[in-house]
View 1 (cartoon, one colour):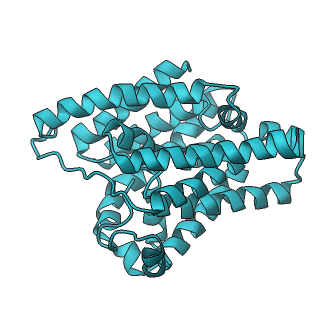
View 2 (cartoon, chains in turn purple, brown):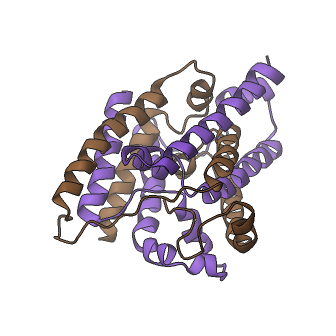
Length: 158
Length: 148
């Protein structure tokens, strides 16, 4: 899909969510929603988590479904292990790849909650709404990503 | 309404999948400044959302006539520190939160490990909130760091 079409579609989905359902796009709070089923600390009983679950959980389920649909319509759904350059450059075994992804996931979960949002809530909605927190967070996560990838693929593997 | 959220999520997931937003090489290409599609996607999404948001705010009401209610995310020290950590995780996995779920749907088994990590990371953050609140001068718990 052409990037301009994809960007426009994401913008329209964001606006539709706000106009029809009165909800601010944001995906990473969904991690809190899922945690709130098993964790009982006050953080997981905040109004934003409890009231947001009703829309965010079906939305997250949709993300999974959308990925499955895309795979099924594009050559058939099948379990996969491939991860492009990660395989060709670092050739991790399956166990090591799972550990690698788990470690990255820890940083994503902790980092997005500390920052108060991710690419969707800060990057797309926050910047569209000219928020200082959105600009600061977006610059920070782009910097973190650029530094890490440059180190991995131009430093270690270069 | 749950059906509407499911549909919007499915559409979002399909677009993320087809545009390469969950593709490991595409994400590394973005951070290497070799591939620019993902910058284009985010840029166009903002170009569409920003004026639409202004129009909706001028209208002031949702489709069902309710007052529009969304809050700006608070500015605090966690924005920079958390953003940096998240960016490192995005580079390591090649996924930001939406694409973790999209990749699980696509059948990429290792994305399940990224989701497990993200849930444990968020769980640790919420559990340690009162301590982190002091270190990063975060807003009080009822407000949170920003939801989304």
